[in-house]
Image 1 (cartoon, one colour):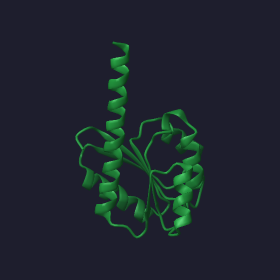
Image 2 (tube, rainbow, N blue to C red):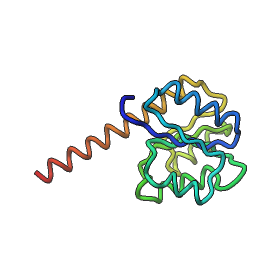
Image 3 (cartoon, rainbow, N blue to C red):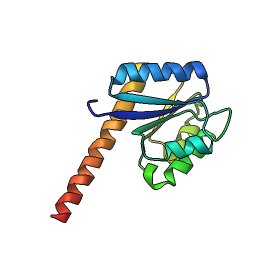
Length: 146
């Protein structure tokens, strides 16, 4: 990943939150900025919804503030984040829970415990795919204006 990348991580387990931040910075390189959120209330949601992030890594079962499902719904209803890649990282293991998250708008669903290597690879793929789509849309818009 050569371009500057910004990831938001929402996880209420403080130890895991710090570990995820460390792992992502380590595996995705120095061009990756990781912002850590132990909970999401209106203030945090406003920042995440601002369009500054390339990806959201989201736990579903949060102790305080909005639930992961509520966050997905709110982000998909916001113009700046309706295409933001959302990767769910959760202890929920039932297939029905994953399908529900996909229906809400999640792009990926990873169950805990997880492989840090696989998590980093899946995140990297989501970010690269979004960038390729954005570049494609931009080049089509430029061609139409010409």
